[in-house]
Image (cartoon, rainbow, N blue to C red; front, side, top):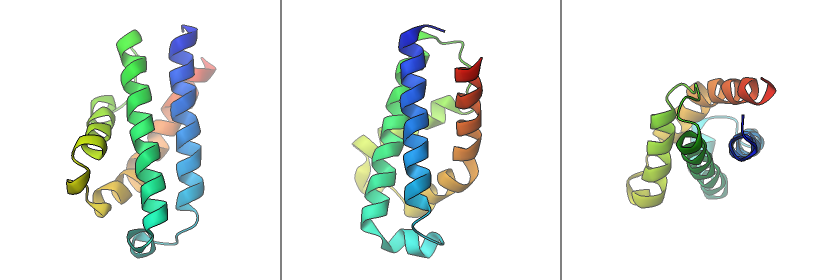
Amino acid sequence: MRDEVKRYLEDALHSIGRIEKFQNTVKCFEEYEQNEMVKSAVQWRLSVIGEALSNALREEPALKITNSRRVVDMRNKLIHGYDEVEDNVVWNVLVKHLPLLKNEVTILLNA
């Protein structure tokens, strides 16, 4: 793996770690929904992840990342359609999809 691709994946993994810390400050969706600071921080880090993966995939299109296109689409929605972002969709990404992404990126970096 080229150094540039590795750097993008490291950026994504770092942002996943930050999101996990932010997520640990709220106990449930309802608390997340009411916490503007956590929501803003999570959304920013999700946009960083999407940008990092977009760049990594541009450099190395054969990277095996489940739902990579959806990750990039989420970034685009957060940046360009910010007024349409639904808290429950973001929460669903955190709970159901972020752990898999973390695992896959970690495997790629350790390969």
